Amino acid sequence: MAWRIPENPTFGAILGMGGSCFVSFVDDKTVHKSHQVWIKGRQRSCRSQSAEDDIQREAEVLQHLGPHPCIVAFYGVDEIAPGVHALRLERAPLGSLRDYIQTHADKPPPENIRLRMSMNVAQGLAHAHTRGVRHCDTSCRNLLLFDEHDPRVKICDWGGSIIEGHKLYNKCGTFEEMQYELPCRGRELGKTPLLEREIFALGSAMYEIMAWARPFQGLSDDEVEERYAREEFACLDGIVIAEIINKCWHEQYGSVQEVVQALSVFVCI
Image 1 (tube, helix red, strand yellow):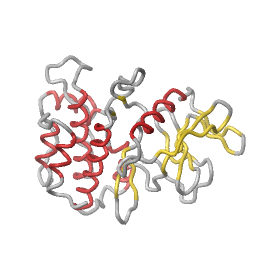
Image 2 (cartoon, rainbow, N blue to C red):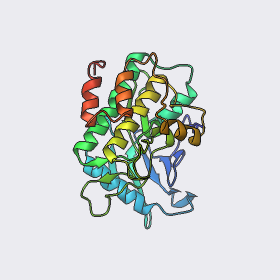
Image 3 (cartoon, rainbow, N blue to C red):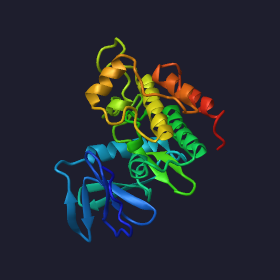
């Protein structure tokens, strides 16, 4: 279900909620992401478990990534109450792309806009890879939509990501949702190569953007898993970048930058 974004939010208004944190309004440009919401010195909302470790991890990943036009902007960490911290992040007034697709299911943007959105995701992920970062949970629920009249998307939610060579953050803290999960293909469960995982998930994100629906939307996770195990994937008929998505799904790219190069034939940035 899509999260309803308040029309005129005030400080502390909850704009979204993930597995461990709230996203709350700060001002027209920024939001807080934390396991607690405080307003005028009083706690207004609280998750059952602390997310301080996740907040620290995501802050370090975002700091390591640095600014990029296809990655949500990071403005530091605020102490919102004694010992309670929040990420200060760029606000996306339109919310997540997944929510937007669900609430505008019958009104997809023009194809050229959806192609540019696909390129945004690929470019953001390619930048992350050049910085030695793997997102580990790429999907349209972790893409933020900006500017309804000239839509662009940015990758968010880096709390489960890894930094290659980091002494602490060298293992994924999360996993992709089933429609975005690379099949084992004879490999041990949990031992699929991370680069191929990232590119497969990118293919599914591009599919969701271009088809304006998730792969096998409406099927259970078990049914999707069974189809993927049989190498059955969502129909790509009518999608102009079908070959690119198919190659992502079949491990035929050696890097995300190769996907960016393939998309450049179709996209004018």
